[in-house]
Length: 99
Image (cartoon, rainbow, N blue to C red):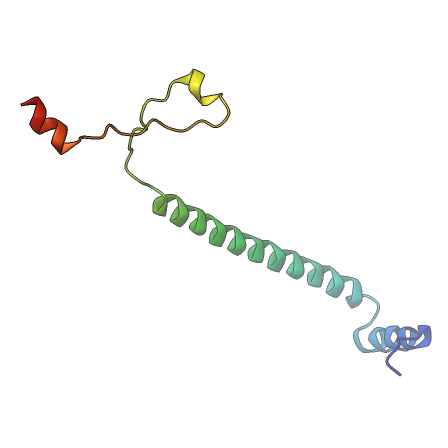
């Protein structure tokens, strides 16, 4: 019952020709095609506008002030198990002894 049979399509074509006439059907199909093309173009431009706005918002959100990285010697970076140098430890007892 839900399937469209070839004779259904034939009856539909005959009814359309009787209602609109053979001269108006190509014009109606052409104008329908133009309308669909315009709708497609407009929806695509809306999607592009939304994507552009999202990219601008992401670009502004990701801005951060520049903080320079500490200097790393290139030869030590390529070694396996590289650990960054530890900051110097200030022993308060040693400082008292030195003074």
